[in-house]
Figure: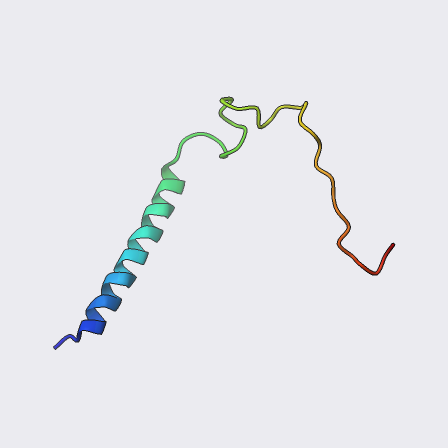
Length: 62
């Protein structure tokens, strides 16, 4: 006989498995390119944006 904890765990694991399956399915069946700059609906690929700069996180160097 199932205890109530086993039922709860089964529901949680089943929900997690469904979420992972749905996420994989959506990524496999999605059309188009990447999620940033490939659709042309925003200016993500705009050359006029401020360039990114690297920040030195090494505290031993001045």
